Length: 231
Ligand SMILES: C[S@@+](CC[C@H](N)C(=O)[O-])C[C@H]1O[C@@H](n2cnc3c(N)ncnc32)[C@H](O)[C@@H]1O
Image (cartoon, rainbow, N blue to C red; front, side, top):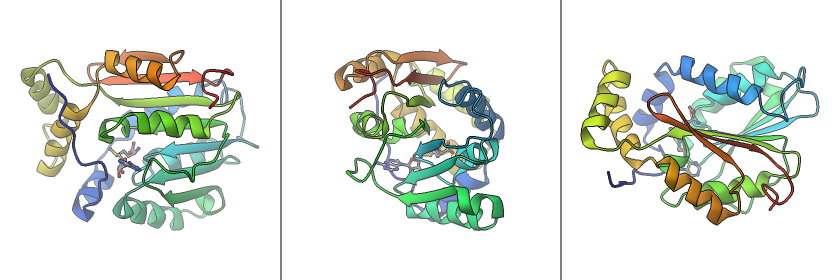
């Protein structure tokens, strides 16, 4: 099934509000557990000295989970959508513990402003938004060094329209119409594991692991061995 891009930024206020109101908690918790197993974070206690960057953070769902899990880490959420970051910032101000620890920055990727290296780069559901996926791998390289861990999760594109429709019914059947529409477009805009492997080779990140998870996700992860994540 051919890829059809969707708009990159989720910049419509109603779309951002619907996304922020949706319950992604079980999948977000699963992402957090995968992140907790990364070499840079495993056994890191309260996260003292760690810095984590969440690319395409949206309203901050995962950004805040990271901050709670590692209360002494510095956590930076980056997104290009003003509507998403307005929600993220409101949540940050409502959570006294997050004030000191969490920061949000509006950047449309690619951006020369990204500065590394950080301890971990994470990204959930950004890749399929990007018209040019090399933008994500370029950002990962800007933020990485020899001790950086990486975790990326995204949807993977189904083989055909029937499989796509079945996924929408199974996973978003009860969701508001705006979210069902977005989910269907997102599946169609997503990449296959083979496409992602090819992107990584082209980006000089061919050593990263790409794996299929459940019926709809793919995950990319690795640790910054010199010559792999190092720019
Ligand atoms: C599906 S949301 C995921 C939000 C969050 N990571 C989560 O897991 O809940 C994708 C986010 O990527 C952002 N985005 C898309 N393209 C971007 C770009 N080129 N630069 C920065 N952010 C981008 C969108 O604005 C949107 O907030």
